[in-house]
Amino acid sequence: MSAAPSPSAAAAHAEVHQRPVLEINQLEKCFGDTQVLTSIDLRVKPGELVFVIGPSGSGKSTMLRCCNRLEEPTSGSILLDGEHVTECHGRALDKMRLKIGMVFQGFHLYPHKTVLANVMLAQVKALKRSKPEAEARAKEMLEHVGLAHKASATPGELSGGQQQRVAIARALALDPKVMLFDEPTSALDPELVGSVLKVMKRLRDEGMTMVVVSHEMEFAREAADRVVFMDGGVVVESGTPDEIFGNPKSERLRAFLSRLSPGAA
Amino acid sequence: MRFLDTFFDGAVMAKYLPDLLSAIVTTLWLSVIIVIGGLALGLMLACLHSLGRWYLTLPIVAFADIGRALPPLVVILIFYFGLPGLGIRLSGPMVLILVLGGVLAAFAEEIFWAGLTAVSKGQWEAGRATGLSFAQTLFQIALPQAIRLGIPPLVNRALAITKMTALGSVIGVKEILAVSSSAQSFSGSATPLTMAALAYLAIFLPVVVLSRLLERRYAWAV
Ligand SMILES: Nc1ncnc2c1ncn2[C@@H]1O[C@H](COP(=O)(O)OP(=O)(O)O)[C@@H](O)[C@H]1O
Ligand SMILES: [Mg+2]
Image 1 (tube, each protein chain N blue to C red):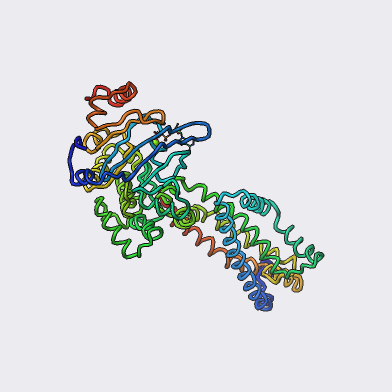
Image 2: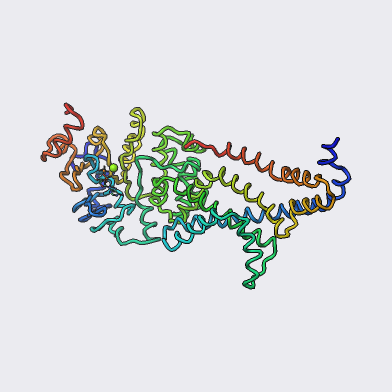
């Protein structure tokens, strides 16, 4: 933890409570005969931001999607705050998913609902908040991502960056214990990436526990507590941003980094 | 003035107007029941279809395909003249409602289902990932989008099928065409048929215009 570049209250907090918020044990995933994940172990402590990098097809998305069971793990266990996600079924799984926020590359806002209704829907239907309560919370979250003035717009009227921030607000409104980001800025025009990263940076500073799959290495250097490098469905290397970017040990990581930003430090 | 006497004979009009008005009422209530029942049944079948269980999918797809393939008149005749042989005697309006409602349901199932499959996987995942159940995701997220996609073809299909209430004339239902064609043979004038055409226009033209407005309103950008 000492290597965290911007020590925050949350990071200090994390030193005290060492029980991981999210724990992945010996996760394996096969699609038919193809093994996509092999013996993945990952522990994410409270307030920690774990950044996941790796070439396309290395299983990053699949790993995230196993955490909330959008994909069914073939074996292994996932624990959230000590509770088995992998043993939940039906309604219990729906309840568990409330605690795991997910942000997709493609936003997936509901096009037939207003921005406000997007952020309210699961609060009312899944969390069973009253409508006024959900609306107040939705407005608060939209304010938080800088889009309070777009509450009555429809997603189609927003830029990609704005849509992604609404998607973040939609997940945050449910008070999740952990937020999973799957390439949140990969579908955005370069000039819109910054606004989304800024929101994520702020979330981190407020102590949200986060797992971020992304190619924004600059962001990783600034905000990540730990960087995990995946290739071919295994975790090849993990360490602080300094260790991973400054002193990569494995050949595969070195190759990946040089392919990604030739000539960069 | 041959034209006016043939198609717009005032005396004939006055004579058959009351009969025709009650036929219009019959056509209207039959249409309403067929449309509401057919769409509701089609929607329900599409929802069951979305569960992805083969023992539901198989009969639903069979129903939708057979319902769309058979000419309604054939089924109407079978129901009206064939079923009594099995001891099942249905009134003319009942046969009309069952058959046309069923045919509309077959088309509606297909249209709703096509709409559901057009809703992206990401929409489902966003719903489920935020803790919504399958049913909540279906009703709150997928179906509203599927219904919007389906409105133009549904309106066209509902129109086409309600116009088929005219088939009721072959099984003694006193709807517009039956009443006006019997008036035509009694009076020897084509005027009742003109009145029938006007009545159909009065009923369906507003619906066509309304559907145009509806289409324009729902052509929303994603
Ligand atoms: N639903 C699926 N069915 C079959 N193979 C899949 C499926 N989803 C992902 N894969 C395969 O799993 C591997 C890992 O994919 P993914 O987790 O998306 O990688 P990444 O996110 O790192 O690019 C890829 O080879 C991909 O083709
Ligand atoms: Mg991916």
